[in-house]
Length: 633
Image (cartoon, rainbow, N blue to C red; front, side, top):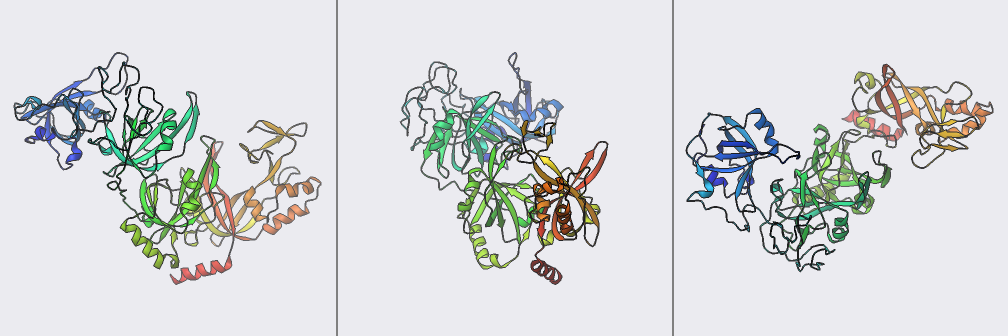
């Protein structure tokens, strides 16, 4: 295969492959050399590379993600490669270098092709100017008065601050001079070229991005072995349609939080890039940005050219998509549950959540959970059945299919929203949608009628053998309840009397020799305890019978609100009539039962355990309508 004629000459003035994605030049690796690290330094290997098109050559570097190709010999001296992605950076000296990001080996002829010359010294291509360029290869940050001698970022004295003093920028809240406590946010930034968010890379720190804040978090605090502090984050979007997450810590929180507004456009510079953790980051950019108190943020007036771009997926299609992915969804919020406060199992901190039910014109609805400030304001924000565009919502298989997200736009001004709003006004309230979300936990209701299964499904579908629990709902009759336990106690256990964290009346408390109750969870001793039901039984329908475990909340539903503490005094006195009566009344009753099925290991044995997590009384009128509709279908 021959080299692409004039490839280096075409690449030289570009900012990168994003300028012309269809341009995939074939070039030759003239030279490849490992860059020696300073003694004691650690990190990935870095390789210097010289690329040639047979007429000209240009020096550069291989991105660290290409190290496996270098180590395997795929990228080697004289190899001919197809360049898929690259960047062209201008160094402070004015020299241009190429950063090779992605390539593919074509062949290795084992010798040099042509007689290339350095393009920076070629007669028809002038060398890069020594002064800092004002456009083309990348935008420059707004560092105020750049008067550096030795410090390329401006400021004097060679202190530990890499950005130095900004000088007096004359901006909003800027008092000038080193050590100013005011943030640099100006309403009139000087004309300059901006770096697209998609063009950010680890090899250049002299960039300025212009972007709109699409999401702003509340201030959160953190504390660990290294110290404590506060942080908040924003998501910014530029005109290329790429968004990136930005985080502010400690002093930067105090400076910038109250001055940054969601929906407004700013220019940002002086931040530090790091590779994004995509497990927690829903933005398109592969990087995240951390801003410090010395970063510059300039307020812009014009935001018309920055519009959200979406790749909407119909709700009905979610059932065929893999969990843990991200989707854009446009839907009507037809129900908003009450916000709830939960305690994170990982951090032990309280979190606010709110569950929305959203529906589109695909005939399906799904549960979407929002968090934090958005959850607290959800009842107001999503009132009156609005059309909402959710950006990069995460797909979960918790309880069928569900979504979780934070980025959204209520009643967006896009054609798809107008079409959906018209559909809802004509058809939405008159059609019955198919729910993709079943009840995933004990506090949730049973699955919709069309998603119900039978008791025999537990064995036929081999439920419980997956890594995560399986959930199912069925209509069944309670045929037996095991009420007897060893000794004189009833079918309950003694739980900690602490109704607050961390016990919440759930963890076992053991009676001591002096008659008090000690809890190993909170390490406290109490005069009394709380008794909670726990027993097993069998349920049956016309297909099969299954053993099930019953816990306190479901038992109280089964017993019409009777609690274990209500029955204990009589049982303790040897009078078990009320106790036996409660179990007898619950037997042979029919319910819509929600169960969790999970394999458990006890010693060397494994068994599948089916636990009731919800009991719903049967609405026979609704049940009849559902049966008639199913027969008619």
